[in-house]
Length: 110
Image (cartoon, rainbow, N blue to C red; front, side, top):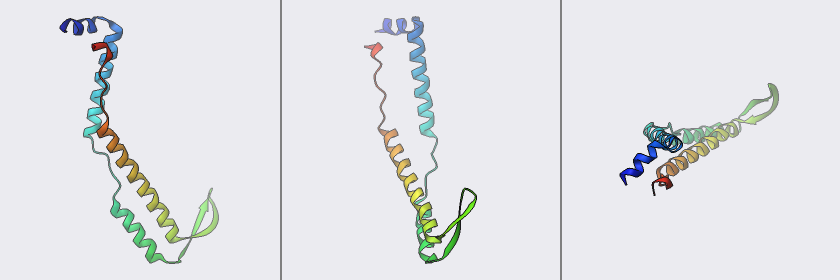
């Protein structure tokens, strides 16, 4: 078994692949320790509360640096709330997938 490890580091191509895999694993572990800023659900609730209190108030809108049809303030705020909820769901899914990721065994060591 020990001779397999010695031979693994004698073959240049295999050694490079093993060292690269260990490096990527180290980068992954380092990245897992760095906290990812999340989306505050409180911010989404605040957008919803502000949209409810805005009622039927209108605001100007722009597209391609030109005036466009006015939109409801509530619609504008809820569009941002929807984007924040989507981002929150994506970050949660990424965290779950990162926790479930496993390193496959190296076929060269069999």
